[in-house]
Image (spheres, protein in one colour):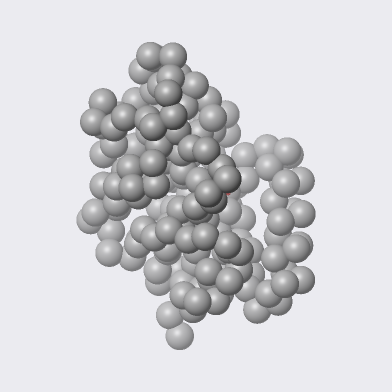
Length: 160
Ligand code: ADP
């Protein structure tokens, strides 16, 4: 059976930290669905369409990575798509505590789905979307924190 993993997140915006986790996970799974979570109550800097377009550009030559969006419980999305694995990246002890709670709740709701955690490489451990967003909002150059395929000049935030 095809091994499908879902990599869920806000990706506001997608960073080289996210990209590295996905590229390393490609050898573990047959397909990875990058699932952009949508939540009507959560304001984002980039629109859903922009976030999806950025990620699609990064993986346009990687047929095993697909980009999608979802609303609601991540485990329900996994079930609808036949995914038995939930992929997450870990940077810090704070990430671990946060992911432990989510992972354990997900396990109790959906025992068939395994969460798989990859540790970030040290060079990416300080990179997070919030900081990248702040640099962009303040007019700084955040290009080294996002994949080369994403030209930030081509995208406008919706929030400000
Ligand atoms: P969420 O809003 O669900 O935290 P994010 O877009 O911030 O979504 O992150 C999605 C996933 O990517 C999470 O598992 C997060 O820990 C991981 N991640 C984010 N930044 C990095 C990074 N620099 N290195 C490794 N993993 C990361």
